[in-house]
Length: 226
Image: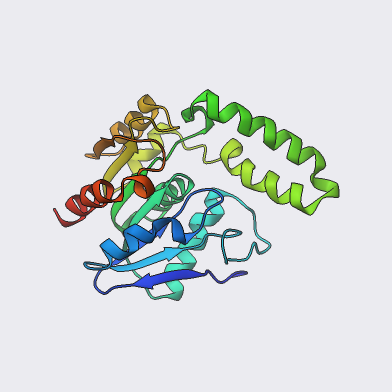
């Protein structure tokens, strides 16, 4: 493996891995780490090129991040884990659960999307414009190159076909905000495509885990411990 993940770790019991969103790091889940570590062995990971985890040399894609997760689990002798992913972290968890179904116990997808079309246009259009500008200047600027890579995750990934969701075997909880940047019908499509998935909308925007931690944590723990 060309990188070593930085991660926060707390608690004992079944492993629960937390995967943050685009441009963020493990500290996004500070309220979740504290609450969930009372019941689980929590690992909150900085994904490739985020936080304190180096960029490395491999592709900067959601599918590579899913492969990185497999290598992280192998390195820490985690055979099977609960996964909670937010935004791009949800996309990583979703792809991992499709590729390695026997290694996921329960799956929580918070604000995930199948493709760029799942994002509201008021959010997605500025992202695509910024991506084109950053990509244009990336050859002569490392900063622009890094910015283009980060925005590229939201333009080019994850490109999951709805029928692929049938590959997920884990009991799944799909959760999003009532005013999420992901279109509600898209979130409902994800929940409908995963066999026997549970869906819940919490009042708030895309960042409900950060803004409404008590309600978010209660919903997640009810699902995990049911």
